[in-house]
Length: 324
Ligand code: PMV
Image (cartoon, rainbow, N blue to C red):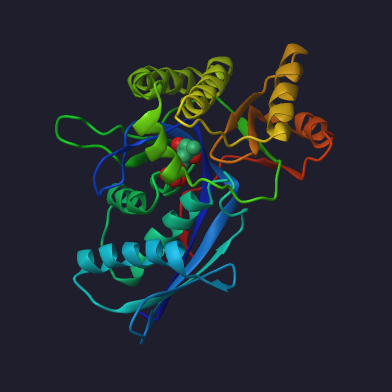
């Protein structure tokens, strides 16, 4: 097989994960619940190359340093699983701003997992493919699947869990996610570094972990009931709680910009005026707004009028990762 191409979409967490179980397995310390989007994603091609080491080109730029090492480390895992030794050239294009809280690592590692698993003829079921993607980035485990996706919490008894699965429900919810881009800057603190710092120093971190299971269960239940209001309230609750743990770290830090706060305030004002919309924010300044499908156009138009907003896109629930 000469090369394999795969595409994975971004996903945005509704109930966030933040924090890792110590060890090499990149296991999240909480479960999470996300929506895979039909906009934004990563296309990746894996090709066997007659060269001494793996190479990685991202958005046309040959990678070095940490970015290359993460890809090489991932390929080492795939090679070990496949009991093979070929080196690879990886070519990826992010159709999403990189390192800015728009989940480029989620789509990036999901596409890399799918492309390399096929290239090395690994026969993985979807759960194991999700586990493989998780080794690259926790949120990538969810981008293997489409629509609402549950990342199972890891059991403290036997470490089972740590993989994602599409939430199979007969929900009547018809939602959109409005993505409001607030900055062109890349984030200064990676989510990995931020998580480790938070769990080492934040006074709020233990309650973030212990309170999280209830949020997850309630959100799943809200999706099953088709209860958008409860799902939206939990979305804001989870994101604000996550960001509060970072603010309470030592030293505290944050991923939002003044413009992110302006957008979040506008979402609340629109809600006071009768709209159904709830914000969420990841490890970067962009604000994502969950709303019923029929309200999306009007809300997006309003949010696009906020001065300095860079772009506003309406995303629908999207598919899981696929081969091209
Ligand atoms: O696993 P990472 O590095 O992609 O971290 C994702 C962290 C958040 O986006 C903030 C939350 C989440 O569950 O996606």
